Length: 79
Image 1 (cartoon, helix red, strand yellow):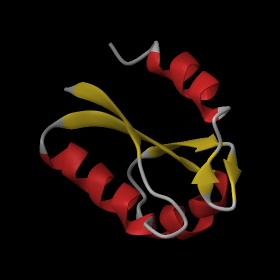
Image 2 (spheres, one colour):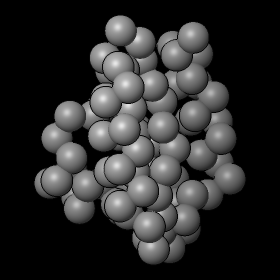
Image 3 (tube, helix red, strand yellow):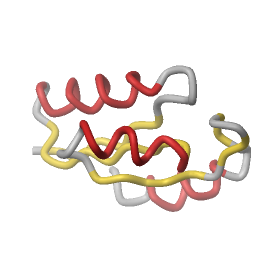
């Protein structure tokens, strides 16, 4: 089983992260981490209990360019 790092969703598309994480599990990922705008976490965590979360900096529900540094550091563990 592999690991998947997803970057999905925004304030207008919260369901994207939910659907993408479910799809990753269905195709065989053993560990799924969702990189999402931090403000989306309460809504997603209540309905999507399987993945781990990488809360990223945002501006009004959209990822901030500073999120790239967080993603790069996390991505090193997803070979």
